[in-house]
Length: 155
Image (cartoon, rainbow, N blue to C red; front, side, top):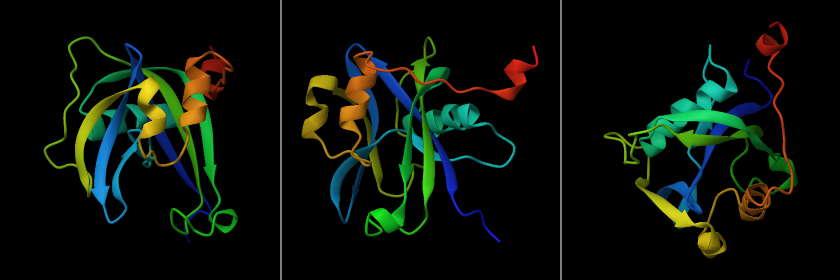
């Protein structure tokens, strides 16, 4: 039996007032996502964010802190993004020196590019989920979230 909710993790990568996004084209047209995906067995959410940044944006990153949490409940949204509930943890990440964004050799289905979008233009693109406001509020310093990791409490 599967879990009642899928846990996902993603990378919020901001540099020079621009955000790094994965670009897709499918039956919904062109749209963007933060590099993100499901947490795999044996990895933490922060480790999943690092992996997803590499897989979807071609960059090595370091996790700085938890930026925000997004919950998708299908029954509250007419199954807009499918029927599986999920909880996504998006981490503020910094690109490691020398790492440059690129499309993976075998990108996700329908992924066509990786693109820097200036924060002032974020509202003009289709972003799934539609979290532009929360990204802008986070970047503006309007709030801070923290992730309490058990292994850090033991030190």
